[in-house]
Length: 205
Image 1 (cartoon, rainbow, N blue to C red):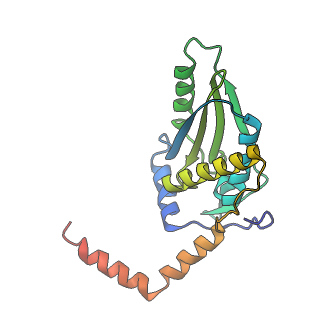
Image 2 (tube, rainbow, N blue to C red):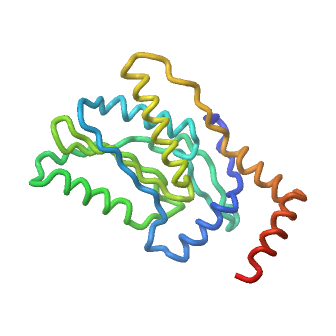
Image 3 (spheres, one colour):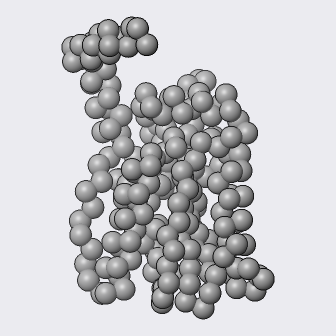
């Protein structure tokens, strides 16, 4: 993704569906949350840098929703805080349970799509060499597959850094291209054919 172009562009049809659904269910955040249980030595600073780099590569990690004349649009804003938090639960009576409670509270908290950060990452230390690597992403920014790809890419970048080798080249596309491709599809005869096909198949449902 280019760090220079912050012009707003259209939401995809799927994103618009999430936008309206979130407004109908304001108290229920439509988020994806996952964590990786890491036992053994972990360079927390290197993992933070890997998460930041992956978020910038895919663009979705720096996504912001804006309204222009009442219309929801999206922009990739590289000025957003891309920090990865670190929380130490080792002093808690039950560190693992305390970390799970913290994550549950985070991914169930209501989000404002226009003002809150759509992605949040954290490392939660629950033992001397035991961490939980957590990520919460609003579904308007990434789906489950995309979220897994994001964490896999961050893991690749982390591994490359700690081994002192060059990471593989990112294959992430530009989000503007994804939005533009959908516009082309929806204006095509293929879209009309697909729409008619599914309208027929679902007529008696």
